[in-house]
Amino acid sequence: MTDEGGTRAGPSDLVLVEARAAGMTFSAIAQRYGGSERNNRRRCATPEMRAMIADRHAEMTGEVLGALGAHMGDAVHAIVTVLREGTPSERLRAAQLVLAEFDRLRKTSEVHDELVDLREVVGALRAHGPTEGPPGDMGQETAS
Image (cartoon, rainbow, N blue to C red; front, side):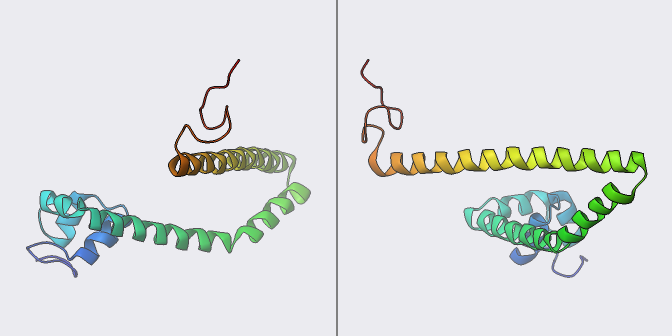
């Protein structure tokens, strides 16, 4: 017998989607909900199931990010409080954290901007092909 959501034949598609989106292994799914590891893996390999798992994973990630975002103000306030009122070693650790996170966020922002630019180039290439556009644009050689 298996836990709720499964049978000897294996878990329902919904249970498979939830379990895989949450990061469960096929072995753990088989043990908890039934079915064989191989059959569960095969079922999850279909394009429809892969899309459902990816969508559910994105939803779960969004839910977690929303919950974390709700506490960002408190986290910043706590760091500022330590910077102002902590012991010298606590203030140093807080300052290092702020500087490291600022640098990480700056780099992430730069990568994001570059990704946006690349997506625009790819979109133009898909729409017009690599030989369209002014010389030197989108990979076309310029005359020297």
